[in-house]
Image (cartoon, rainbow, N blue to C red; front, top):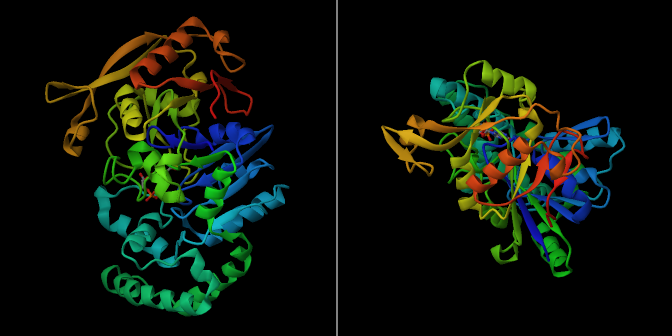
Length: 427
Ligand code: IMP
């Protein structure tokens, strides 16, 4: 009954889509357990490129059952667009299961996300503007609208009216925006209900039975460790728990059933949005990483901030998630460098820190302490095994492994499906 969790080890965008897709052939269920269409996975199959935001990557493998679990917040319009887009390209989403307990992103969530960011000015989070934070806010405040409410028009109307009673006051009186008409929202969401009904299921029960039957369940986290609401760089985080612990609550699977935690780790570091980032490069080296690594957001198209590998945050990911394996991605991007700096610790007010500091104030002041390692000039994108890598690339991988505290079990050497070196089985 293997239940494998896949998490981002840094600030998201580590290349999880490639990992889930690689594992797709070995798993029976691929489950998204948190986040919403703030995430973005790019998967390249042959000459086709797929950008998925809400659907689990498993949807691209015909044998896999993709699941959107209870911990996700769903924008139904976006979900249907994604389903239709794949259908137009010959990919069926018929097997998709959507948890009846997942929450819906409503029009007022999107309006509030944008307007609150604007009011924060320089202190803004840099959200994706998709309504994620306000939707989770309402969930915690117990005034959210859930997928199961789509099945009961009377309840749906009541919930929309109750929510808009309050939110319209906020939108008009605090933010000077227009009111949102509850009747229009109801009509729109009843339309979604018609189309989404066939997919709605008790996904926790489905997954529990699947595990009883020895099926392989892959739990796919969005974002990354440092964007976790509890363990990330708060408040510059997303509003859910991408970490391995969040997978249990977000999918309705008990912790005792998890068998493996695979963390996706980019060979350098990137982040989108505001917040501390000790190894960020604000010079031409950062531009070089961005261009060479194509570091532009899948969801918003924003430039990603880029910097060297940070072993402190990799160790932190190991500790928070109980990482059993790392999947190192984008090693090929570093080809051609004379020397490669790696941040091994921070200096904060003259004191060395080997762990992520306890307070955000310290994290904001952390200066990286670098060690440099020799680079390699060869193109490694055609490598088929670890031994095909140049000695310095192998040494770089082994160094990251030692510093990060868990074995590197797979390495990405290019965006394609076949450009992955597998060092040991991942399931
Ligand atoms: P939100 O999730 O839209 O509320 O945005 C909160 C923060 O998380 C912002 O800094 C976003 O840029 C960041 N974020 C959300 N989703 C992703 C992702 O998939 N990759 C990287 N950053 C993300």
